[in-house]
Image (cartoon, helix red, strand yellow):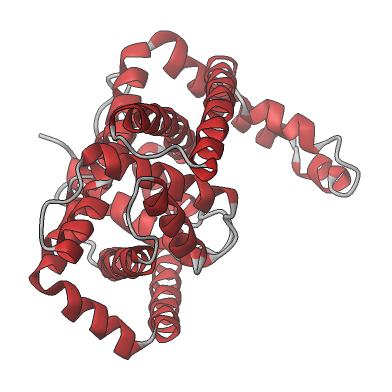
Length: 346
């Protein structure tokens, strides 16, 4: 299937899913919550403009780490970042639909192997930054409990114990991912697949000499990035983690809209986002985390002393913001001129 046909297919699938999602949320309920926040809905939706440029910079560091000719403009990668995330939001399982789309979009300019390694290394960086962000979030939680004066109930004690355990898990995961960057992961992944009884025959048939050479080259690009271009790797991780930190401004502004005052700061917002995103990633099979997000937001808000009933309201507003960016992202699949001028950086 040609790239043009894939884009058209993704566009129409996206439109259908957007309509289904809005129907599931309820048109009247959607309008009710928009009216409830009033003009605040504009800065709430705009907060993602603090994130996506940083995501683009992170991806760009991993794509052009070796001072290669930058055949893809920053604006074009920005467009692919937004549209790729839009596809991920509507992907039912593990939110990985945007990665194949980005590979297809990039391969004409930088080749299939480099496009694949670029997208895979960024996907891994996205996960790595998650672990870093969770550590930051639980550290913030510990200090918040120390200085907030809130009573340490059994629920809050349980959260603290879980936080200590999970920080250790995050550190182990980070070490594992760093080793994957250092030693390569693609070849090892296919070697594991060859040992799984149900699929090993199919995998061995697919592992032709040409395919083996491809995954070996992709692995070598993984290793080259980490071992020889550590500065680009570090900058990418910094941009991606900073993007996650900036993403909490959405929760902060929603809480301001609800209360009519500046009732919450960055630290509390990071804590809420940490608990919510952790639960959402542990239960990843539902598109847009239907029901899961509201419950986790309620638990996070109760943890730091707010009314847990606000979880439903905050969850609904974040969904409205996501829907807005899904519509923008799916539209960007069709708007080819955005960032496509010459496909080169001056």
